[in-house]
Length: 245
Image (cartoon, rainbow, N blue to C red; front, side, top):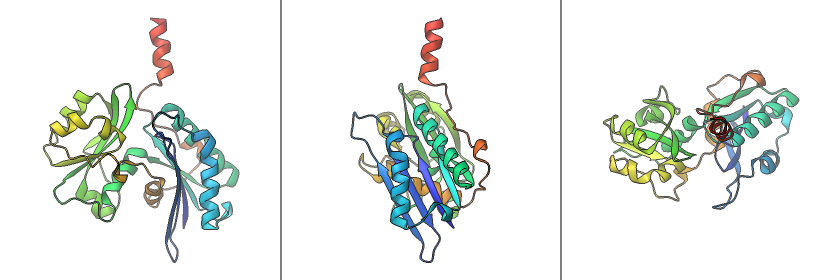
């Protein structure tokens, strides 16, 4: 089975493909803008998809499933990623499935050499801007046992720093937080005893490889059924409401 994964939920653009083989293969191409630069989703997403398929020597007719990160994440990024995935699926006649970006991020903790025996809970945290974060949490044992998280201890939601610290403290378990939101909220999370890997650790990066892994256990369907998960209204709508008041 060949699965193509796309993610534009964060500033990075990630495209990956896994192939069950033999031999099994995992390929990724990504664009990580430098600090201060704007995301390049619209410019790079299709180019990265072509790059991955070329490297794998695979044509579109050989792709069995497309998996796209549906968020939470930035409004513009999710809109570009989901719209592009839906258009590709329709044009090529390929089933499409949506994957939670937080769910996918949490899988980083189950990679070879990344598991920590002193950690019970993995908290996936994405920077939501405006001083907030998107976060969810799962038991590490469940991630390691199944290869994908089950029912979250913390369902995906948007948090202020104080609210996230209180929610994490209420878990009463040794925890590790990963993601750019964990870096943004490092101080308040570490006060709760949460371990956060060093800033440059790859654990903090959303990768479409994990989207592909999760998609193995998901059913693809009609493109129009895949919708972005924003968790809050867009900044433009907030500004509009403020102006109206």
